[in-house]
Amino acid sequence: MKGEQVEVGEISRESTRPSQSVRVLSLLDFILRIIAALGTLASAIAMGTSRQTLSFVTRFTRFRAVYKDLPTFTFFVIANSIVCVYLVVSLCLSFIHIIKSAAVKSRIFLVIFDTVMMGLLTAGASAAAAIVAMAHNGSTGANWVPFCQQFRSFCDRISGSLIGSFVSVVVFILIIIVTSVAISRR
Amino acid sequence: MKGEQVEVGEISRESTRPSQSVRVLSLLDFILRIIAALGTLASAIAMGTSRQTLSFVTRFTRFRAVYKDLPTFTFFVIANSIVCVYLVVSLCLSFIHIIKSAAVKSRIFLVIFDTVMMGLLTAGASAAAAIVAMAHNGSTGANWVPFCQQFRSFCDRISGSLIGSFVSVVVFILIIIVTSVAISRR
Image 1 (cartoon, chains in turn green, red):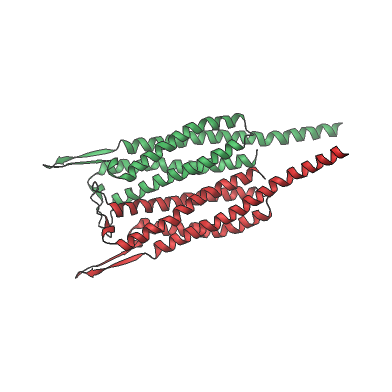
Image 2 (image 1 turned 120 degrees about the vertical axis):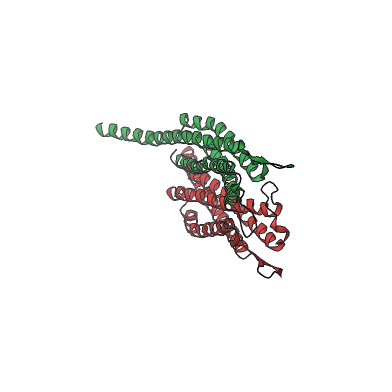
């Protein structure tokens, strides 16, 4: 009789342990999504509001820099906005996973979209980073002048806006790993 | 007795079906890895061997374009090479998964590295794409001239080299999805 009780206890402990660890992973996933959403939002706003007008004006032109001058920066703002909206929407599903820790199909659904969104965000961030690097250093081979020498505050702003995006990329990698571990432990 | 036999049959069919589907997924994973490896290899070679020397020479300069002129292209070649080597190494583990379809920990190990490598590859490809787009169209805002007007064959080569890389990014997304489904069905 005593032996039986111990066995029953062990089985129930075995079955609750994975469920509990999955719940912790789901909570971690939820927090990571909030961080990534804030990162992309900050990046989109920082880039989207960056503009600088130089103090000197010639007869015909006013020297002004906005992010829309370069299509890569427009893509960066769009990519960050899309990913931010996706992350906010995915929070609902992530919250459901905290309650229903056994759900598997919806987790795979999230992994699929997370991977695609991570690709989109990485593409936007890297493309913008390549142009920002060119704006800072220029290229003697391609005969491209570094326009950061004139538009210093604009360049500082666009360089800073990359940080949120790259942090979100790293957080996305963590999210995908956490979800995969949760799927394996259901 | 008859009822019992049917039940036993159903149970064994239930237990072999996931194992078989996981084996198919493992085989698919193996094939996708080969495709991605070939894509990154082709990209690295195409970009690494791209060079053009213009036929006219001035007294002091010879007009020559190689991928090393722009650090972004060097990063592109390095990223593609690293990912290609990783994919070839990961083929061993992927092959083991075809035989041992129940393995979970090694699959999560693969998901982690796959996600990181996908990030690296997407970063390299997008950064190079941003510079290639600038080389084709230039930028009036930044006062950057489109050097593709002179270096036509060099530009065609570097544009083409992006294809293999972007195909590999899409294949990477498929690989991560396939691995996640395999983990859920073990």
